[in-house]
Structures are given as C-alpha cells and as structure tokens.
Length: 139
Image 1 (cartoon, rainbow, N blue to C red):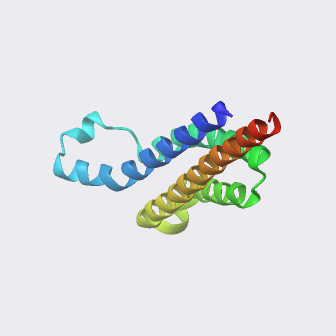
Image 2 (image 1 turned 60 degrees about the horizontal axis):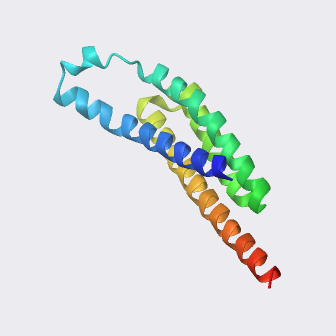
C-alpha cells in the first residue's frame, strides 16, 4: 500500500512537471534568451524521458490501486491519461502541430494527475475501512 501511495504522489509530481515544462518553458526562453543555451534540452527528448518515468510509475500505482480498491473507473481514467500523453509525446507534433501537442500533453497530464489523486483517495479510504473492520471484529 505504501508503494502505491508513493507511486501516486510521484506520478502526480511528474505530471505537474510536464505541464509546467510545456506551459512555462517557452515563456522563460522568450523572456530570458540566454537560458536557451543552458536549457538546450530538446522538447521532444524531454517528453520521451518523462514518458520513461511516468508510464511505469503510473501503471504500477494504478494497477496496485485497482487491486486494492477495485474501482475500474479510476484505472480507466489513468490509462486514458497515459494514452493521451504517449500519443502527444510520440505523434502529437506531427498530428496536431506544436500548440496541439502542448494542449494534448497538458490534458493528458491533468487526467493522469486526477486519476492518481482519486486512486490515492480510494486507497486511503479502503485503509480506513479495513482498519475499522479489524477494530470492530476484535470486540
């Protein structure tokens, strides 16, 4: 259960990092052009690196959460967000252009974050229910 909680929190953090990168990096580079040399991290490469972190962490947390609380809607929401994020990172620029890719990435990341917040809440709720049942069964 602890691994699921940590994974959910990490996935939310990585999703937020992705959103911040997509929305604020262009603004920072316009306002402070010399940073473009320091921040020479290619957007496509950054998204691929994030995918290598987000997909396994999210998948593990969502699966563990599903096996714990059995709410398939949360799993489907998280899987939908992951699918959108993968499509945005792999084909988004070609399919939708730069702004479409950013929009798709932000939407996918927000859906993933929502799924993990809900997954975390249901996991905590299930823990409380199990603890209460154990307490009342010992009386």
